[in-house]
Amino acid sequence: MMWIDKNVDESAKKRLNKRISRRMASAGILAVVMGSSLPMTAMAASPEFARTAEEWAKLRDDVLEYDEIAGFIHEYNVTVQNNQYEYNEFIKDYGRTREDVAKAYRDLADDLEADKSGESEAMSRISDLQLEQQAKQLREQADDNIEDSHIHYLSYQQAEDNLAMSAQSKYISYFRDKLELESAKEEKQTLENNYQLAVTRRQAGTGTEMDVLDAQEKILEQEKTISKLAQEIEYSRQSLLIMLGWQAGDNPEICELPQFDLAELDGIDLEADKQTAIEQNYTLQINKRKLENARDADNQEKIKKTIRDNESQIAVSVTNAWNALQSARLSYEQAVADVSTQERSLSLSQQKWNVGMITRYEYEQQQITLSTKQRAQETAILSLLEALETYRWNVNGLASTG
Image (cartoon, rainbow, N blue to C red):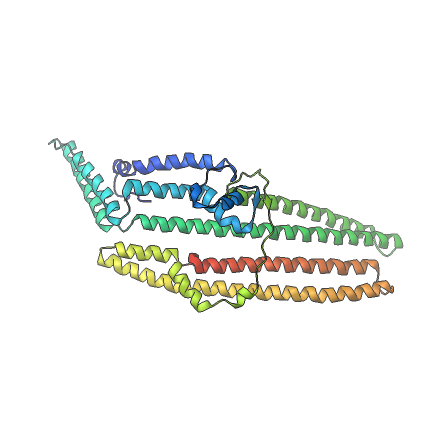
């Protein structure tokens, strides 16, 4: 958004920004309205003809699927809707080009000069001088202006994609937290088994009352952990729903995460993706647009240096995301191997239990261990999916530039 230089006094700021302030107030009202409705009933950002009837039906039902996230963000996220409103109002008030925006500064400069009294009294001359100086500053800002509507458009698109990426992460975290809750409940089962073992040993004279009390205390502590995790899951659920246009108290069905083909990882061309990331990066596109708009040679050189730095950092960001993806894949493959190993151990334990070589407690512990390994594998696949999404977003415009 275009704001007046801090060296211009408040009266001058108000003149140029009064239209912006009216828009911001209207947008605030819009946010309240949009945030108070369900996606199935709220006013979408796009006109009806922008999507097919089937697409609208999917967005307006009471079901949330992972692949619908970008659509929900675009249509119902309050920040995105406000940004779209601001963008449209910016064009109405200031036009599209650098020259249109600069004209707004010059118009205010003209207004300030028109307000000069021209009187000879000392106070009037001082006031006129201040107005003249402010008008001069505004014209200098007009000459130096490098903003236009396309830069605002790119900034808002960047914000929307960041919100979509954040919502995807929340969605994945929601299921990761649910797995953690399952693991916590399994741990409670182990602690309960330990408690029963402590009771048995105390009765047999091989354990103490303190052992029993300690085992009981651990169960109580685990119950607190489980309760805390359940609260965190509900908070994550509400946070995700609010981002996508629902209210915190709504209860749409949140579908399971989709499966993805690991072969996609083998098809990644890192060098080609680096080039795509440079072409798609929002920050770099914005700086290139600023370079096109810049008129001052020194400013042009500064922006060129920034662009070179951007390109270098984008390549680093994509490489880092790729390395993190490979690490997540290795962790997943290790988790798969751990499950396979534990399955063999459980099979052997079952044979031993059948012939009385181990106790039921020992056999049940092997079952719990397998379940824990399986939870770890499921968690690893979620981490792998998140790493893949991070890599995709790096390639598709959101790579870090500094």
